[in-house]
Image 1 (cartoon, rainbow, N blue to C red):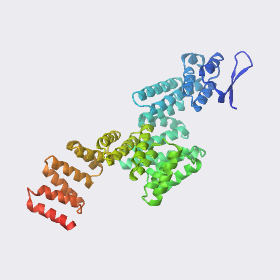
Image 2 (cartoon, one colour):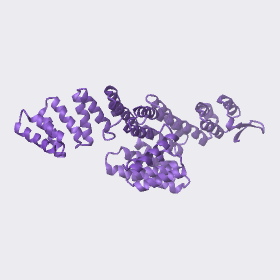
Image 3 (cartoon, rainbow, N blue to C red):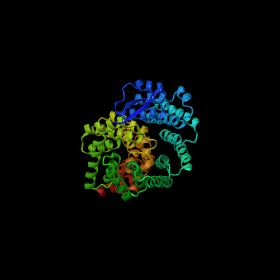
Length: 449
């Protein structure tokens, strides 16, 4: 049974505190810690134990009391433990900020910043404070500032494990946000090198480090080596749902029947390990959509939405809901979910499918101008997508802009000379203005038949 012992002032006695039987009311422990002016490392041990047991308020109470002005005065000469308490509070508020939505998110990030500022005033060179600042910047999406923070640590100690992991994650995220393919690949290469450095220096490091290596190799197109790395993660941690989901996606991408079955089995295993894994929920919803089980699709997608604040993942969940209602003929509900889906993506290149569905719904309701805007978003990603071009051609025709409609359908016939629908549309559009050309297009349709 793990315990800590708090020395009683003026005696040789100690108060024993059993860590697995901490009181529900942290005030009892705090009274002893303050009365006996206990060493600050004991405050940290007890606070961390509360956190491990899921007693978050008690954890917060101990640390907030341990960072108050009275403590600062009495323990003025104790640098490391005071910094550790402030950094723990900074990390705690960073964690809360990531989980919350605005405006509460900003409140937690502001609190975290203040704790890190206080820690820096005690010792501005302390590496753990810079690492905490870097993690806060990552949470806020300030990747360059995060990189600068981790670099300060690595310039002093190139083998600092948390800083290596932090900088590796920053490069990976930079790759995800970089629009130029060549620069993105360079970011993933840099990330991979740092993860490998971390692994070389700390061979017994958590499986998550190998997970970083695997994702980098996947992004770099090194699929066989990525699969090996994901498999190694599962050897070390059989219930690592991130590795399971990644391998499942790789199986599904082969489009081979046996691999697809294997991929869906991995998705189900990931879901059983962690029922709130948004990525697994979205892929399962996609699978059940194609089996026509709309109730299951909607349940999985709604669970996914409640489990994530990540924009792209939420967009995919909304899209699954939208197309489920779309296929059932509930166009109004489908439209609302398509709108929600497109609002979660920064640009159509991130996820173009909801723009297709939204354009179809808008076209059905006769909202031609908005439908045109939606399909134009699709063309930004797939400029030769014939279905979107034909939809745009029909929109121009409905708006009375026949010249634009004709030119659009002609473009379709150039891209796909066997698209008989485009020839039919051209024939009908040209009947009144150019009878001979109309007959030629309709003659082509008869040849198809």
